[in-house]
Image (cartoon, rainbow, N blue to C red; front, side):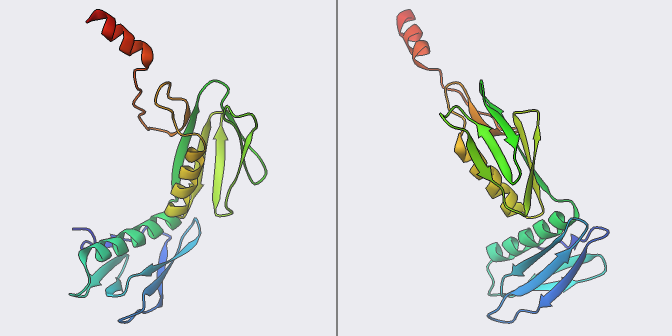
Length: 188
């Protein structure tokens, strides 16, 4: 069950309980590591126990399991973020689709009549490989994933030729199109 096993704290990462929560207030945990610092609020009813190199959670009997699991996942993401960071990779697929890094964001040519400019948050960085691959990195998993989703939303993959912005290992199921339907009807 998620949350019952202890979470190992990697070398070089420190956790500190900033505010101990009580019945109505959440516990605030601050994590710092080689990549930076993050804070997370652990839900009321979930107690954070720091040990030597491990952190574990205990729940009250009134706390639902889903809240307990959520608290564990948020804490795990913070620890992983400050120690290793998170990466989301995107690919531009289509003739003439290109991306270039500007000072504070990305400039993309996506088949529209004008180039699309996307401004990045200060806590997220992007690298451009070639002119069709984007690598988004940061320590906050939610922010990295949200940024990748917003970039993908600019031109999602279309179902007939697969052109658009997609995640690196995303599989786009293509529809057959009109010509496949007429060929099927002619042979029957």
